[in-house]
Image 1 (tube, rainbow, N blue to C red):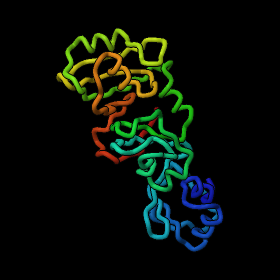
Image 2 (image 1 turned 120 degrees about the vertical axis):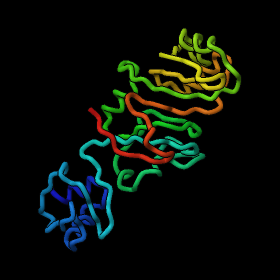
Image 3 (image 1 turned 180 degrees about the vertical axis):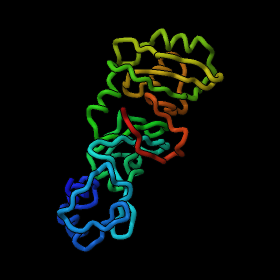
Image 4 (image 1 turned 135 degrees about the horizontal axis):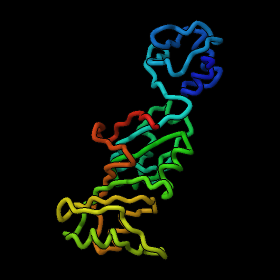
Length: 228
């Protein structure tokens, strides 16, 4: 891959800007200065990328997948209204790509959020047809007993909806902590399901999305992940 195209794909600069950087010897790959703008590189071989003495993020090409531990107080939107965008937690390079969140989390909801530039992966992970589990921990306002879990698994009718929605699994960790597994992604689904069952969600945390969890990430941290 031509070095200029590679740098553009990495979100470094415009074509002219990348040409200028290479011309002035300001681009290093794996510790070696790129000789000229006609140089070709193998994207998979790039371990480090340095621009004008500063380390840049090495973005996997052509598609990349990010696991983010979403903190509270961020909107899952490129055009937030009331809170900062969750995308502001990512480097400028990454934000320069055409990225989208895989589903949404409310501003006050925390936990696993996947972000990608791969539209097919996004569809595969969010379509109910593919039956991808999403596991949540909901803190309940009112003390609950196993009848709540039975009701959620049997199915509840959401407000303004005309069909029942059921949980794939539901269990109580304690009287105020519900672990819920769903495969759909309806608007405010967990909160609405719990409300339909006669309780209320005070705090919601997504523990797992498919095989991914955030046990190795602090709130606000992220990393690239491999997708098979």
